[in-house]
Structure formats: C-alpha cells, structure tokens
Length: 107
Length: 456
Image 1 (cartoon, rainbow over the protein chains, first blue to last red):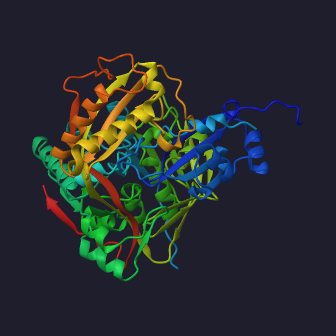
Image 2 (tube, rainbow over the protein chains, first blue to last red):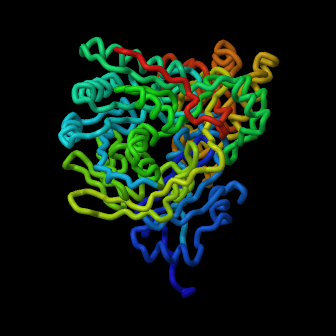
Image 3 (cartoon, rainbow over the protein chains, first blue to last red):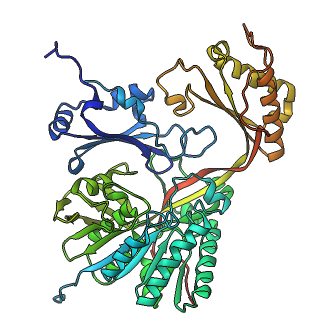
C-alpha cells in the first residue's frame, strides 16, 4: 500500500469546523461523508493528540480530548485556547476560523 | 411506588436560537396551530465574549428583542400558554435582566395585557462565592486557574447558570411569563415538563436541541422556530417551515456543536448521558430521539461566570501594499513598539500593544502554521489596551504616526507606510473585559436564586 498516493481529508469530510466550547476551549469537528472512512480513522487511530499538537504548533498536553461520535460519524478534538475568548490579544472571539490546519491532513 | 397515569404528549414551541435573532411569523403561527404547552426561548451566550457581561449591555438589539417578545407574550397570554425566557439580555446579570424586564413591561402596557410575571435573578454575591471558596466548594473548569479571593473581589457581575428549580418554583407560584437571569440553556424548555413528571433526561436533551431552535434542522437557521414533542420514552423534533426539516444527521450533528464531549453534557445538578441515544427518521421531516439519560452528580454544582475590567481599548485600521515593507513587517512592528515605548517612557508602561496583521496571521495568531506571508497586501489593526481611555488613545495615536513614517531598511516609498480607509483613523473602543471566573460552585439548595412574581 506504500505506493498509494495520500488522500486529502478534504475529499472525505462533509464538515470540518472549529468553535469555542466555552471561553477556554476550542473544539474541532471532522464529520465524514462515508461511514467506512470514519471507521478507518477510528480503527487506525489516524488522529492523535501528537498529530493535532504538531498541526497547531502546541503542546500535546493542550489537546484535552479526542472523541469519536458514532451518530454523526464524526471526530471531535478539543484544545486549550491560547488565551480565553476576548482576552486582549485574542484573534477570534467565537473560535470559528481555527480549522484551516486540519485541511492539510493527509493519510 | 404508585402507578403513574400515562403522560400526554408535551409540546414545546421554541421560537429562535437567541431572543432577538428573529423568526418568521408564518413558522410561529404554524407552531401555535399545533397547540403548544410551552413557548420558550433562550436569550444568552458567552460566545460574543466577556464585554457584554462586564458592561451590563445586551449583545442583541432592543428593537429586535422587543419584536420577538411581543409576538411570544401576546400569543402566550391570550392562549394561556406559559412563556419562558432564560439568560435575559444575553449575559443574564442584573442590568441585562432589568433591560429585558423593561421591554416586557412596555409590551404589557402597549398591548393591554395582564399577567403574572415571574422573575428569577442569577447574580451571585461575592460573599457567597468567597464563603464557598473557603469551604472548598469551588472547582475550576478545564484550563481555568483555581479561583482566589483576589479574583473574586475584582470580578464584576458574577452570575450562576440556574437549573430548572427556580423556574419550577415560579411556575408553581402561577407565573404566566417568566424572565430569568443567566440560565442553563435547556432549563427554560425542561422545567415545565419536569414539573409535570416527564423524564428529566429526555426533557433536558430536548431543551439542549431546542435552545438553538432551527439551527439543528437542515438547512439550519438561528432565526426560525422549531417544535418539540416530549413523550414518556422519547421526543420528536420537527421544523415549522417548508424549507427545512430535521434529519437524524442534523439532530445528531447538533449534539457536537460548541461542546467538548458530545456523549456527556454537564449541567446543573448532573449530566446528560447520550451514549445510548438513538436518532430515528419518522418521516415528514421529523426525528424521534430515544435513550437520553440524566445522571445526577455527587452534590449539586452550578457554573459561575464573572469578568473583570482589563483596561480600555483604542484601535486604528490601515493597509500596507508595499512589498518591501511586507517582507519586513514583523521587524518593523517590533521596532515601532520599541520606539513608542522609548518616546513615552513611563506613560506607556501600563499599555499593551497588539498588531493584528491580516494577510499574515491576523486570524490564527500563534496557531498559524504558515509563518511567511505570500500576500501582496496586508491589513493591520493597531490595538492598544491601556489603564485609561486617555492613555490608550495617546499611545495608539503615537504608534499610528510612528508606523506611518517609520524609515525601515530599504524603503523606497518615503511619503507614508499606511493606507488608511477612514478619517478619523483612530477609534476609542471603551472598556475591555476578560473572563475571570468560569468555575463550578456546589450549592445545597438549587432553588436558592431570588425569585418574585409581579402582577402586570
């Protein structure tokens, strides 16, 4: 399988988004179009705290949890916000535009 | 245990995602034609940031809130359907509640309506928080620092999200319209059915979805109604306009929205366990949900919210099109801040500088993985937060003029470095607040929130 070209997450996801989960957390959702892709990600643990930490340039300990949500065939990742929403220096009060690094995921 | 009578369906009309976001009258009328047992809306959120709680201002517009309330209260009072509003004025502290109550009283006079208005206050006195802190009854939420007495002292407008209990007390006292301060979003929908004996897990989960009205439908909308029917072992969701419907996917996906764990949703007194939850398409754009459970926690914990004043903000917006300047932007901004500090000395000590550089990392800041911009133009928001508005204005003005004429390495364009879209270029933004309290507090009586009934 090594010769196979890597696929982009953008081809298999239905939704990729970010949002505050309260003022201190940022939560990222990846919802898959196809249940098989979701199951593959889940089984092979293709999303890890290490991978997310590397994508966002943060410590692994800032990744609070990664949860697989069956009813929406979705992966939810929750990160510590760099600073709480609205604190001087914040760039995105609602946290709605912090998803772009996820679009670079290839597998 | 005595055998209960079978409960009839309990029908809830949720008008809008946030009071003031509006809803089509056609959807509202369709909802009324289904003879709801309750009309409710959540009015609050911490999403717009700490400013609104601190300043006592609503993040929604008064005219829009009055329009929504007029339709809801008129229909509710005329048909004898309870109308419940939670987190009044957006943040639900005293000034927000008073603001919303004024609107309700105006509507009562204008429409010649008479009813019992139930009021619940969510403000928590500092003494209560300090006492709880001393007794170890305060816990920080994830990534929040442990609370200290100093932080409590400097915080303003401390509120707690009330659960269903104060609403139940007001309903038992005969309130026809209830306006409450900061509330757990689902409480306005769940209180009456819980009082009538419906399962709290189903009632709260239904409330959790209805608090966003038609956002959980597809296509989603925060400005349209949604209808929920609670039964003994399930609840049904439906949209009220032909253009949207509920699907198992849309309802389930909503459970993910703005939450860190979609299976366990903590709230006052316990958490919703959705691990056994099923979403089923029952046709005609309706979804049946089963399996939602409420698991009471050890002790009754409420979420506290509070903010403190962090200073005063002044900003200036400008653009840069010069490629030489764009290539050196980080060094230039650093040098400009140093020069301003050098010129002002002590007078800039209390001020903080933030350069939001759009086209580079204005959106993601430190999280931005693209370190070198390839943009041909940049937008810069120069932000200064100072201890007073006058200091912020002074530091901002100097920073703007120093950056405008700064002679950076290799400069060819010597007439000015910034393109200002506006005159005046500087804006005084007023107070800046920061979240200071976002903790859980254990209480012995979940209905301790002050309530009263006013005859209108």
